[in-house]
Length: 514
Length: 108
Image (cartoon, rainbow over all chains, first blue to last red; front, side, top):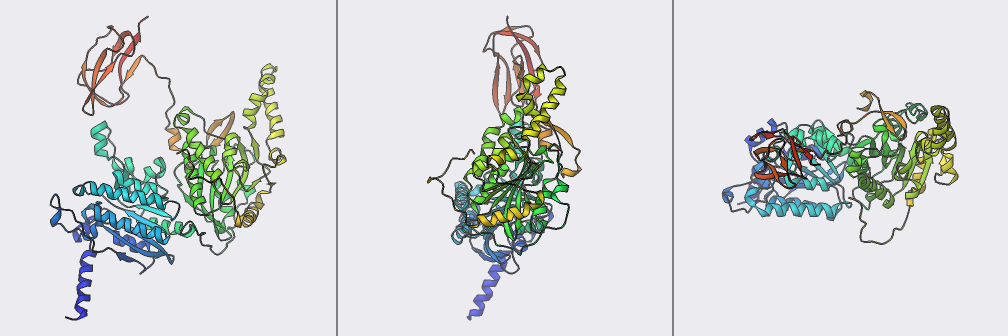
């Protein structure tokens, strides 16, 4: 027998296993509008870059008739490859093999590639498409999930972890994505929940469809579990590649610099922002007026849109932006927006991405629902995240910066490195209307015409305090700048901050309010 | 998304801001002080039995009705000494969550 026959035998074996659950199951997968696990990996990674491991792993289950069953690859594909020529580790659950259910060996394959990613300090991408725990394997499948969650936590803040939900991801399985940095979902395909519609119906009598309970839209708009929403799997892969281009491979590196580009010609900052702080504008127009090529990758676009988070580049370098959005709820901070921004700030800090904060907010959202939902606890997250972040922190105050909102949005007091203010900035405990009502309560009440007096006092307060110069006199802001100078000032601040070095008290870890 | 929406007024500390609302904000539930004389269901379920009648005087802690949910028979008890004003449910009725079951009042 020659070596040749061994090679042919290997090829035959590979071909057999690479078919996953077989033609019928693959056809079913396609009918659901889904690509197969293998097609997904090939579509996402650079051409011909994928290398698979543990192809021949098989399960060792003996109960419930499992001993006679062959499950190709045990329902998951793992391997390494490249995106934009940079290495990544990847796993993709194969729904065509026993519904992508997670058994002992399935989990071992996933944890193997996770260990690899952490050791090699490269990003980990997980494609989830699984019916959940393989019940026949009992406690071993639970152990498998636990091992995955543990590694997600260890790897957090060391390597980027990306979860792609391309099918069901239910019960305990949802906690791996929840522990990772970015979750991608696709319309009609992604389903995430702890307990499904049938259990909810039997226990509570509530009828709800899978899509309404845990579909892509719900997680993008309502729960905040998802960070990127796409209409198709291919669009989703483009989003992942775009994100990968903005972030560093691990926490000891900086994101790769790109060719510097000027922002596109468009309306100037002065044209976008109305002088009256009560009139809205789209903050994204301002962000695009200062980023390279006017490109901005927004994260969690549809969740708590009163705050904007995302990545852009300035002179080729990645910057994380946090910005109030006056167009939605006047840009207030509330439970959801605090939660959203705080986690993003921590992400940027963990991965050496400087943070630019664009501020224009009237404060916190009033309401019993907010107070009862814990706006104190959630709001504190943003203070915590900014205070402990040691990357370059630059703030630009465009218009209003009132009260607790002013402090929270990377103020000097939380150790912003540079604070710039436009001449339209109003840094005060509250807006002139509210302040006049309190400070001049007596004068207004005793006046012959209280409303006239009120307006007069509002005007008085406005002239005295609704400007950047009171805070500038205290050194709380470093420079009052012309709006058209915003990009240049941020660029210079970034340049100066290049080798920023600060020392925090030594501790095991802090206790953030989550 | 935001630009197609109609601008609305949001009042914060006396100032009226023109802005858009999110779905979540529009759907928020306004807080209402609970009325202790209205007994609502705290879970969807079935009324298994009713032990009281209208105008009946009832002591604190007495069981008014049984609400079966999640295979558990929940006793709904009188929160204070008082009287039954009106019974809004019938035996064997299936009711949703937050459904008004019984109106009561405190004895003077």
